[in-house]
Length: 157
Length: 157
DNA sequence: AAAAATTTGTTGCATTTACAACAACATTAT
DNA sequence: ATAATGTTGTTGTAAATGCAACAAATTTTT
Image (tube, rainbow over all chains, first blue to last red; front, side):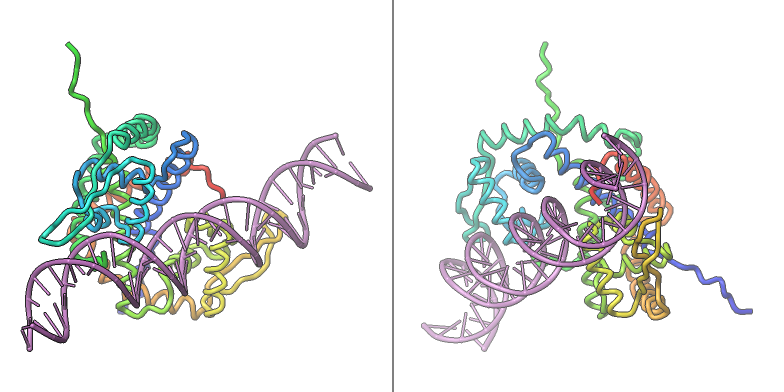
């Protein structure tokens, strides 16, 4: 007897779809929040800024890997942040090679803190529907999953 | 005594960052897979196709909401799918208004199934590191979270 | 020592994307 | 009845993005 009950598997039901859609909505919401609160830098600039604050003296390529932009666009984002006086860039060496490293300026730290203060209560309001513990658990599972992904994806950065 | 232990909260630690990064990596991996397996349509076209298969007779705007593209780009994706003979479009009414609805062609169903068969084992291999039950749980929490997001995000579609 | 390959950042270009304006039609308000 | 508003899809355009080519410097290979 043949099994005619073929299980249809749809992208819609997958974790991949749920991830993509949730992330996209989250991005839309945050961008709308940035607009509403009249935050003067873009979301991408803000996450780059935060990443630099957490990794003082990082070089461009390493930052690119963290924010998952290519080298070209990372450079452009940094141009903008430097022009606004939020970061300083300097040439240094890494493995005997000349690289451009960067760090926060006082102005950049101040700006980052102000933005953080502005958005944090809003974002807590959004994540609030799901219990905090559950959210942490999801974050941790996602992290494990992501770390595994990083080994499989061919990064051209 | 003043509390000088100010808790620094960074974007890097947030569920938002983890979501964005995981989703982006997942997208990169899937696109590389599409390339490797010589799948002839784009990832976006594929998810649109899957969505149409799951929602026969859907109109363009409703599809746009599901795939989170704007109406313009949804139309362009559909142009491409129609040109390839994977979907058929027809004018119908919805609330007494003329709308363009669509459905799968036999060719489209065949193509979708072939693509599904090709990628499914690869993707299971990726999600495999995390126990299936845990993955389902994450998906469900994400869904709750996303449904809440949908109420807060202003959709201009 | 010369040639080839590697690393890092920049520039240019082609594709993708989002957003606004528009056309066609229907509904509601005046 | 006429005007104003709303819905759906298309077109045009400006911005974002990714990719390939390049320059400058270093390391490895021959």
